[in-house]
Image (cartoon, rainbow, N blue to C red; front, side):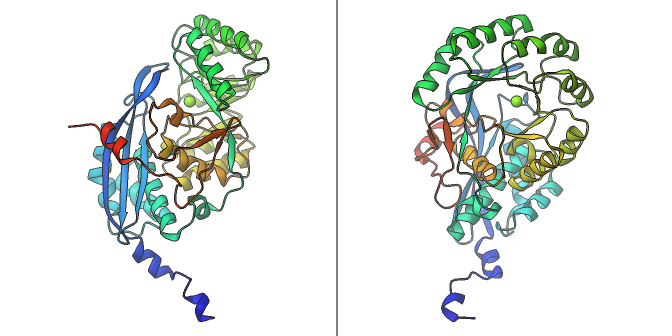
Length: 389
Ligand SMILES: [Mg+2]
């Protein structure tokens, strides 16, 4: 081989040595949000993350973030449990391993710890960030390369107050950040929620895309009764109306609904993705690292959905620019993200956790450029928002 060329090629053994995981630190971050964010079963005024920083033998650091929503209510993980499991079980399984072996890292983490997908995804994205920085390439280059570099962006309206939500939606449109909206239902009785939705639909420009997320809040009977009303109000998509473990009931509802149903809390693992798609529990599937546990698993879930003819949606759990950028790198490698992505988390925080932030422009969120995840965490803000024990 040409010796000049050979000197530029990193040998596999060199990469494994350079990216050996030397240390990992984890911190609970509590970042204030612009307003309360309500779900059918909780409400938050600050967003909790577990931030991990991985240091490799070559001195490169990588960042990752595990997100939750107000304790173990959206799913089983809380920031406290995530940090405890990261420190006691997941980090010891990874120390000394090459960060570049991302799939091996996932296997080791699965052996050390069942489920805990948000905690695992924080470490997975930090390893991806550090490896890509070592190679001087953007993270998506290690996942197959970007097929798209920006995504139609969706903002979640979740205060439960119709007047406030109309004002907030108008502000997002005027800023050019978001012109598609997801409304959280299930706070109140369905009739009250439908009035709120009606007020919003009337106040927003004609044709505004509105998605409804029930967060497992309705029964099959309530779905049969109220989904036609959501259809009359022009809702384009309904997210996880039924409890996560009622896939059969979701499938019955999906069969009779004139609006596509999206699987969210019901699909964490590849097996759940297969079962949900095989039962036709929804025509759309929401992809989230906190559910799938790693960028590669997210892509496997996406492949199962694609094989079943199920559309893809880029879900979020209010991640900051750190977690959101990891999602965008994974989404960018998919041939199609039919419904765009919500990833509004960076804009619901009063202060971005990174110096650069994500770019929201022309109602699209843009894939960061630069090596690794392409974002630079702000140490001063992280110190300020870190939970003090
Ligand atoms: Mg959801």
